[in-house]
Image 1: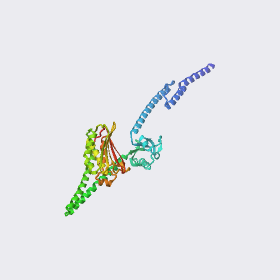
Image 2: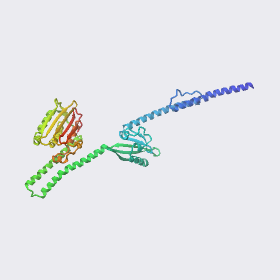
Image 3: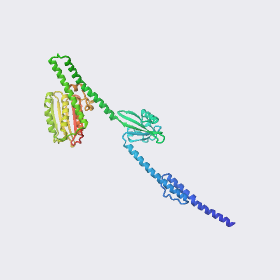
Image 4: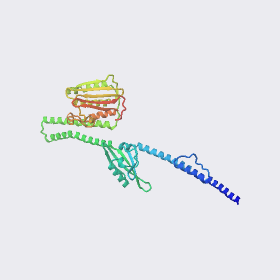
Length: 422
């Protein structure tokens, strides 16, 4: 009996040790292994001693861990690619969920609206503080259709497009993408085009109306005296010349803006060029009774430019200077150089330009003194032509003026221009 009891005790002990070694201890190790994998930590080993089942579980955990790490890398790459794409989009972009809470914004949108650093879950109205955008999103999410509107923020005009995001399986709307496209330049261009058409119509209407009126007068009253006929023909000639000047200037501007030909550059000696121009204008200077001075910096180097266009710049500037400088006044042509730039300027002691008009004098048809400009025969296009020619040479124009003291227009050109095609 004793030996039977001892055998049972020894057998139970051996069984316990075996069970503990094969099942209890391995499952503790397995539990620790699962916890480390769950935290994303890589265990030193996935090998577990014990029964075949526990060893197979360890191998399966290793496969799961490696697969999860691969998926994490793929997600990180996709996230990086998404952020790169969003960062490359200059327009403002945001994504909202079905409750109009913001989930994603790009750098362009941050520049426009300066939202909080962490916008995830923020209501749309706290990011874009405009009720019309919120209503547009509400309609897009409800109807599942593309929505468009415009948003005006001061001088900035934005076109807003909202595109619904539909789940591929059942078509459920899960959010929307909103794009804010800056159309300020387009609006400004449209306004300039509208102003240009209105200005051309106005400039052409006056001389055409006068010509038509006098033609009707001559047709209706054939007994008009010779003296009166000569007077009428003189008026008609002046206005026909004005029409011709406007058309020629418009054609010049069209050619400069059309990019249809190339500037032919040559080496130009500025002293010779300015000397020739002053001689060409001697008669007009004398008729107006103005004094002309040419101020050339010492050791002027030749510049590469289109000589015909450069002459056109100076002719337009001198024409304005002569028109607006009273008899006894002074006009100065000046040429200066730095190692990289050449500055040509025309100064006069004329009536000057009001400060509020100065930023706009290079616009087409803009006149500071409209009545007097037309009276003197100006088309309102000369300074615009000057600006375009300077830009074609890679340069720019500047103006300064004081009422009653005169005006200075500067044309600043690079010594070695990167020429744009005209």
